[in-house]
Image (tube, rainbow, N blue to C red; front, side):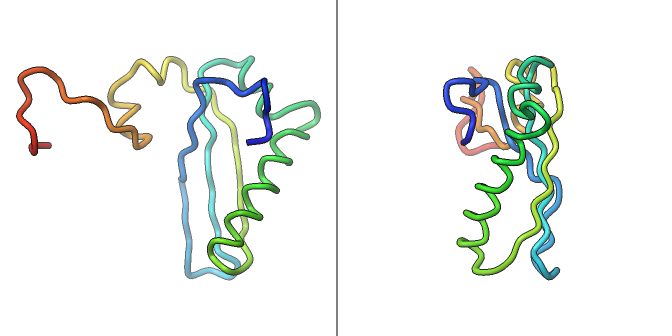
Amino acid sequence: MKLGDELPYSCAVEITKYQENSNPVRIEATIHVERDSQKGMVIGAGGKKIKEIGMAARKAIEEFVGGPVFLGLQVKVLPHWTRNAETLKKLGYHLPQERGEKRGKS
Protein backbone atom coordinates (compact mmCIF):
# COMPACT_ATOMS: atom_id res chain seq x y z
CA MET A 1 0.00 0.00 0.00
CA LYS A 2 1.18 3.54 -0.62
CA LEU A 3 0.83 4.86 2.93
CA GLY A 4 4.19 3.76 4.32
CA ASP A 5 4.59 4.59 8.00
CA GLU A 6 1.27 6.45 8.00
CA LEU A 7 -0.79 3.28 7.40
CA PRO A 8 -3.76 3.24 9.77
CA TYR A 9 -3.84 -0.07 11.62
CA SER A 10 -7.62 -0.17 11.42
CA CYS A 11 -8.10 -0.07 7.66
CA ALA A 12 -10.18 -2.53 5.62
CA VAL A 13 -11.22 -2.68 1.97
CA GLU A 14 -14.73 -3.74 0.97
CA ILE A 15 -15.56 -4.50 -2.66
CA THR A 16 -19.00 -2.97 -3.18
CA LYS A 17 -19.36 -3.70 -6.91
CA TYR A 18 -17.65 -6.10 -9.28
CA GLN A 19 -18.83 -6.23 -12.88
CA GLU A 20 -16.66 -8.74 -14.64
CA ASN A 21 -18.69 -8.75 -17.87
CA SER A 22 -18.38 -5.03 -18.53
CA ASN A 23 -15.64 -3.55 -20.68
CA PRO A 24 -13.55 -2.49 -18.91
CA VAL A 25 -14.10 -4.66 -15.81
CA ARG A 26 -15.69 -2.34 -13.23
CA ILE A 27 -14.76 -2.50 -9.56
CA GLU A 28 -16.01 -0.18 -6.84
CA ALA A 29 -14.36 -0.40 -3.44
CA THR A 30 -14.63 1.34 -0.09
CA ILE A 31 -11.65 1.76 2.21
CA HIS A 32 -12.98 1.75 5.79
CA VAL A 33 -11.13 3.54 8.58
CA GLU A 34 -12.16 4.19 12.18
CA ARG A 35 -11.42 7.91 12.55
CA ASP A 36 -11.55 11.11 10.50
CA SER A 37 -7.81 11.59 11.00
CA GLN A 38 -7.21 8.21 9.33
CA LYS A 39 -9.46 9.20 6.45
CA GLY A 40 -7.27 12.23 5.87
CA MET A 41 -4.14 10.04 5.79
CA VAL A 42 -5.66 7.74 3.16
CA ILE A 43 -6.97 10.57 0.96
CA GLY A 44 -3.89 12.77 1.34
CA ALA A 45 -3.48 16.43 0.46
CA GLY A 46 -5.65 17.24 -2.54
CA GLY A 47 -6.51 13.54 -2.98
CA LYS A 48 -2.94 12.71 -3.95
CA LYS A 49 -2.56 9.60 -1.76
CA ILE A 50 -5.87 7.95 -2.76
CA LYS A 51 -4.97 8.57 -6.41
CA GLU A 52 -1.60 6.82 -5.92
CA ILE A 53 -3.31 3.93 -4.13
CA GLY A 54 -5.88 3.61 -6.91
CA MET A 55 -3.30 3.70 -9.70
CA ALA A 56 -1.14 1.00 -8.08
CA ALA A 57 -4.14 -1.19 -7.26
CA ARG A 58 -5.62 -0.82 -10.75
CA LYS A 59 -2.30 -1.80 -12.34
CA ALA A 60 -2.05 -4.94 -10.18
CA ILE A 61 -5.67 -5.89 -10.89
CA GLU A 62 -5.22 -5.35 -14.63
CA GLU A 63 -2.23 -7.69 -14.59
CA PHE A 64 -4.30 -10.26 -12.69
CA VAL A 65 -7.41 -10.12 -14.91
CA GLY A 66 -5.46 -9.60 -18.13
CA GLY A 67 -7.21 -6.48 -19.32
CA PRO A 68 -8.38 -2.96 -18.55
CA VAL A 69 -10.10 -2.19 -15.25
CA PHE A 70 -12.09 0.77 -13.98
CA LEU A 71 -11.45 1.09 -10.24
CA GLY A 72 -13.54 3.48 -8.19
CA LEU A 73 -12.37 4.10 -4.63
CA GLN A 74 -13.94 5.92 -1.73
CA VAL A 75 -12.93 6.27 1.91
CA LYS A 76 -15.48 6.07 4.69
CA VAL A 77 -15.23 6.41 8.45
CA LEU A 78 -16.81 3.39 10.16
CA PRO A 79 -16.34 4.09 13.87
CA HIS A 80 -15.20 1.16 16.03
CA TRP A 81 -15.51 -1.37 13.20
CA THR A 82 -12.61 -3.40 14.62
CA ARG A 83 -14.59 -3.97 17.83
CA ASN A 84 -17.88 -4.99 16.23
CA ALA A 85 -18.22 -8.71 15.45
CA GLU A 86 -21.01 -8.23 12.89
CA THR A 87 -19.07 -5.58 11.00
CA LEU A 88 -15.93 -7.71 11.04
CA LYS A 89 -17.89 -10.63 9.58
CA LYS A 90 -19.44 -8.35 6.92
CA LEU A 91 -15.95 -7.24 5.91
CA GLY A 92 -14.86 -10.87 5.52
CA TYR A 93 -12.87 -11.40 8.70
CA HIS A 94 -13.06 -14.86 10.22
CA LEU A 95 -13.49 -14.62 13.95
CA PRO A 96 -12.37 -17.26 16.45
CA GLN A 97 -15.17 -19.51 17.55
CA GLU A 98 -16.93 -18.48 20.70
CA ARG A 99 -16.84 -20.78 23.71
CA GLY A 100 -19.50 -23.44 23.63
CA GLU A 101 -19.89 -23.24 19.84
CA LYS A 102 -19.34 -26.57 18.12
CA ARG A 103 -16.89 -26.79 15.24
CA GLY A 104 -18.32 -27.12 11.76
CA LYS A 105 -21.51 -25.17 12.48
CA SER A 106 -22.21 -21.71 11.15
